[in-house]
Length: 248
Image 1: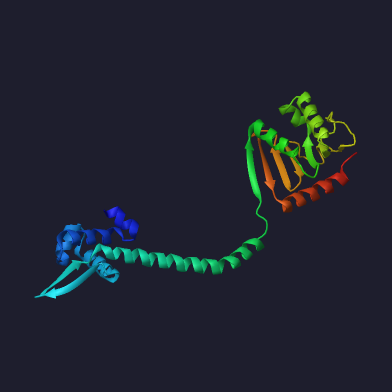
Image 2: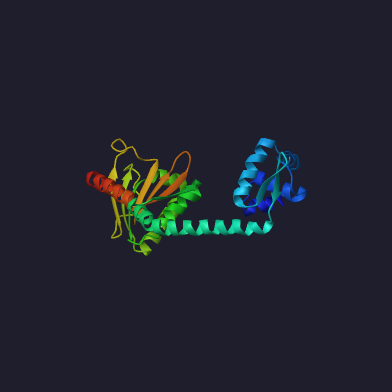
C-alpha cells in the first residue's frame, strides 16, 4: 500500500512509518524504525510530520514515549485539505491570468519555423508557395542550380500551374546566362544579377504572404519556411532593394 498512500499525499518514509504503526499498534520510535526499516533519527522526523496531519498520536508511559496510529479515516481530511489548496490555487490563477495573457500578447509575434529535408523537402516548400492567398511571390533564385534538381519540363509545369492559379511571380535571377523558360508575361516578371555582383546562386528565397521560404540547392539539400509577418516584411524590403538594382 506504499504507492497508494504516496498517491494520496504521504511521502515514501511517512507511508512506511504509518504502515508500520498500523501493523504493530502502539510502539516506541525504535520499534517503528525497525518495522519501517528506516533509521531512528529519520523516524522521529516522520512521526512529527504524521502527528501534524493527525495520523499519529503520542503519550508517555513510565519513562518511555509511545506512538500510536490514528484511524485511516483521517486520510480523508488530508485529501480535503489538498482539494482546498488546489481550489485556492485555481482562484489565484484566475485572478492572475488576465495580466499574464496581456503580457503574453505584448511579447509580440512568435515565428513558426518548419524544416524539410532533401529534394522532396525543397519540392514541398515550392508547392506551398502555390497556396499563397495574396497571389504574389517574390523569389531570388538561380536557374542553373534549379536545373540540377529539376528537369526543364518539371520547371515549366510548375510555372504553368502557377499561372493557372493567377499567381504573380517577380523573380531576381542570378546567372544571367541561364534565363528561365518561364518567359516574361503578365504574371511573370524577371530581372537579373550577375554572380560577380551578387554571389547568391546556391540558395533560393521566396517571400509570399507572411512566409519566407529558404532552400539550400547545393550540398545538404533542405528547405525551411518561416511564418512571420515581421520577417517576411524585412525580406520583401531586401527583395525590393535588389529589384531596383537588378538588370532588366
